[in-house]
Length: 247
Image (cartoon, rainbow, N blue to C red):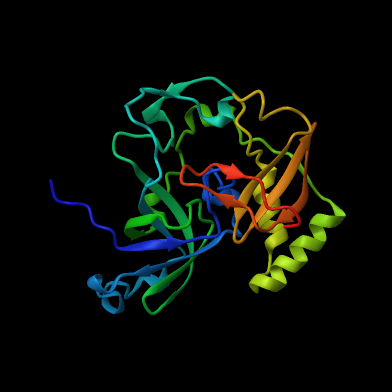
């Protein structure tokens, strides 16, 4: 079997699995870049790609921690019920290869500017293929179990402190649309429905994005962004430690 090679590393705002959209189209404002390494002569190999609106990204789930094959998985949308691994998009697979449909914003030299990305910063990209509507879209396709298990949808609110923190982060990072991105991430309920401790009403949780940790609480059907904290750290296993006081 031919060896699999990495054509570039994706740079995205997502720093860990928790907080990364389960599908890219759930967060259309999630922007990322992919610089194709010189070995693959990007000035030639990317020629013609700028005419496509979307691309497929084949990636490596490089942070997977699974040690053995499990034939059944628990998609969050099924709230504890199981399906076969190959009837899911779970990253825990025999070959840890991901598939993402992303919007191609522009091609700039050796770099692809992308939107609607569901991949963690530093993800190795194995291949890029153009999305071709005539052959890639199946109008009569069935959605299987997903048709009866839509992504959860919460109402989103921002505290006064959070609004100020978001404005400060946009100014600091030179970004626009951070409110929309945070809203899209939070709306689809990040919590693991099988973790009773995590789903406790009113529990404050957080995820890392860009250079801050977004702290939020869920009460009933509303998720409230409480604040953005800087100074937090993650250790190697992608677990969180509390931000430094005053951060």
